[in-house]
Amino acid sequence: MLGIQVEISRGFTELLVECDSKFAISLIRDGCPSTHLCYQVVAIINIFVNDGGVFSWKHIYWEANQVADLLQNMVFH
Image 1 (tube, rainbow, N blue to C red):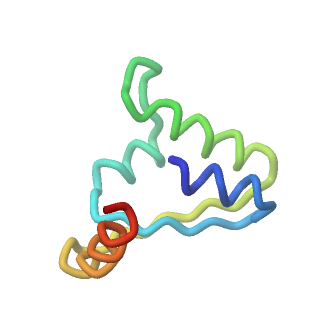
Image 2: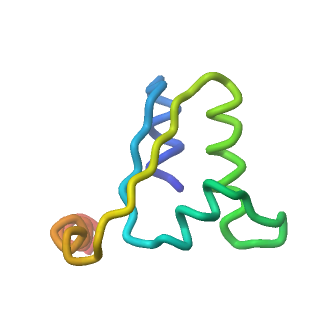
């Protein structure tokens, strides 16, 4: 969520999120109840889109995401 908020605050009007979770993508695409843990993230994305932003998502396989996970772990540890 923080990454999306940072990019929006920097003035980006088009965002592409690659994700290895089809369930997460379905929450973004189809919405989720306000009691769901991801509700705030989905709400931020919806506000971004309603304000004219372009939000795209792409499913990638877990194996393809391993490099990104490794880099993220190096940065945050």
